[in-house]
Length: 319
Image 1 (tube, rainbow, N blue to C red):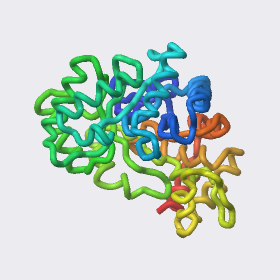
Image 2: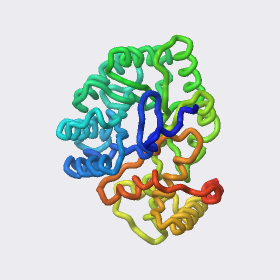
Image 3: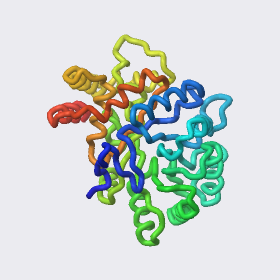
Image 4: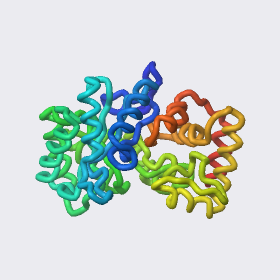
């Protein structure tokens, strides 16, 4: 049995957690989506069968006037108003908040209490180290995270933005010392950014049964297909997405997405996510929606079986 086996409902196992095929990104909550819009998206996501919500303590400190924690606060208010805490898997991250940078034991222990307070809950399902902090030994932050698991504040731990070497070192320490181990990895990975995960990092994950929950699954919106030559899109991320149009790979990928999407009567975004979900080690891609109108194409990921030929077409186009 592998770490990515399907449970009967089409959910994936992530340590002791069972998660839906699409992880909803919470970076837009309290940023480009206000609380009312965020609640509407969260309600629609859950109504569509989703149960896995991703955020971080730093979202969205980059916005003028924000200080970090805005996304967690919105999600916490939603959980409190809906009374559905037990029905959803909440993932958040530590290490990048302006007031709690790095992975020292003291920082982790202070930051987790702030996150719990904003999320209005007494436990976090999946707690990520947001960025590796190479000034801290893996023994220090893994022991601190293990203490949180023992205290019931965290159910499972995971890593985002970590090198293959440090992931290997972390897993070895956990195995040797019998402390909590990383069950998941959150890498940057999509059809136009494959070398950010494939290779050594993916190999370590596969070897140790660690599943991946990729971010930028739609390349800042580029893989939705709404960015085309000679068209302007009104989005806070349009600059990042449009740059892929300038590359041969970007144009090839769009063409392949169009071919497969047309064959299924599906949206390009659904096809891009389905390709990602079919890759080795992937448990659930992360995608965010600013409006409820953007959600159906994302949620359809679980109902789009791509043929081997279609997967090969996309894989070759993105090479």
